[in-house]
Each structure stands twice: as structure tokens, then as C-alpha cells.
Amino acid sequence: MLRSKAAEQQLKLDEAVKLLRGNGYQVIPPELPPEYYVDNSFAPVELAQRWSCCTRTVYRLINEGKLKAFRVGTCLRVPYKEVLSYESGQPSLS
Image (cartoon, rainbow, N blue to C red; front, top):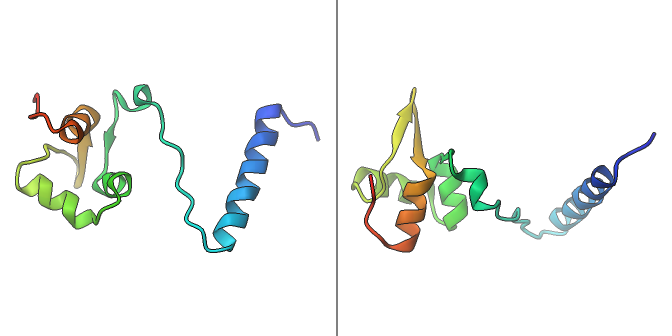
């Protein structure tokens, strides 16, 4: 079975991650480039992982109006630009 070079590298990476997790290490995925998120939004749980905090902290920030969010059905989403604004300490643009 022939595999591309990228597929081979991903397989090696997956095996390394399994080995690290098996030995009790926490594996944090690499940060995606900003252009990936420009038209996207974050769920509160994704922000909690990004900021290494509790999900309740993210919900509290939303409820206090410090972080703007919108709903998609019953799910909350925080726009990428809002996250950047909050992380930089500047007031929200929206």
C-alpha cells in the first residue's frame, strides 16, 4: 500500500502522541494559524482549552458581557475577532 509523505508523517505523529499519552503526558495540539479562524467561531469549551481555564469561566465572561457570543440553535459561539480582542485586552469592536 502506497502512502504519501504527508500521510506517513501523520502516522508517525499519531504513534508518538499515543506513546506520550500512554506514559501520562498531556499532548496539546499545535496552534492553528489565525487565518484558519477568521470566519469561524469558538465554542466555550474550545476557549476553555485555549485559555487553560474552566468552561464555567468562559460562560461567566459571556454572562457578564465581557465576551460577546451568539447562538446557533442552543449552542453558544464566540467569534474569532471577539477572542482576539479579549486576549489583547482591547474593548470589543462589535
